[in-house]
Length: 241
Image (cartoon, rainbow, N blue to C red; front, side, top):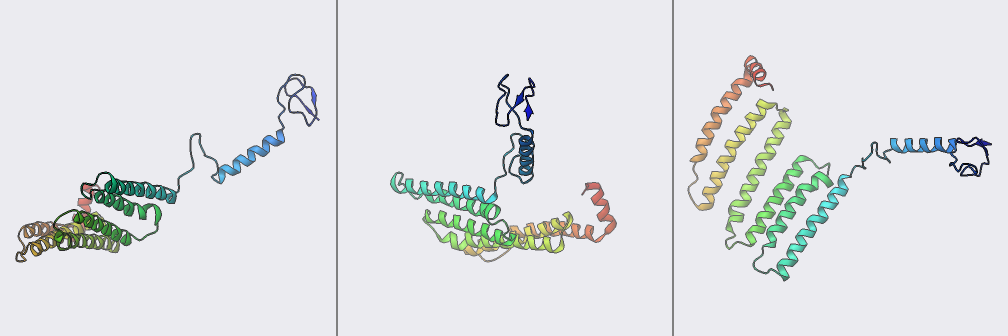
C-alpha cells in the first residue's frame, strides 16, 4: 500500500492519480529503473552527455554525403551543357573540379586507413585528370602530354621523396628545412629542363642555376648548424624550437 505524497491518503497500486487531490502517483521503483536505464544508455553513447549535444557524424556517412553532392553538381552541369547552354564544353571544368574534390575527400572520409603515398598518387591522378579535361576544350592539346603531365609527375615525385625522407630520418625543423631547400632546387632544375624540351630549346640551366646557387648556400649553412651541436642548441634556444 502506498500513500499520496500531497495529502497522505491511502492509494491502490493501480491508481495513476490521487482520487482526493488529483496529484500524479509516482512509483519510486520505476523512477530508479528509469534513471539506471538512462545512465547505462549514456555510458554506451546512446544519449548526449550535455544538453544540445548530438551524436557524432561518422566519416563514411559524411563521405557519402559529399559524394552525392559532388556527383549531383557534375551531372547537373553536364545535362545543362548538353541541352541548354551548348556553347562549348564548359561543363568539363566543373566536372573536373568535382572530381578533384572527390579524390581529395576519398582518403579523408572513406578510405581513412589509406597510406599517405597512395593519397599522394590519388592527388596526382586527380590533377592530371583535371588538366586532361582542360585540354579537351583547348585547340592545342600537345601541352598536356608534352608539358603538363611531366610537370605533374615531377612534382608528385618530389613530394613523395620529401615525405619518405622526413619519415626515414624523423626530421626535426632544421633537417626538414634542409630537405625542403634541396628539393626546391631540384624542382626548379626539373621544370627548366622540361620547359626547354617542350619548346625545343637546348637543355641548359639558366634561371634554375641561380635558384640552385642560393639553395646551395642555404644548405651549406644548415649543414654547418646541424653538424655543430653547440651551435645547433644555441639556435634552437634563440628561435624557441
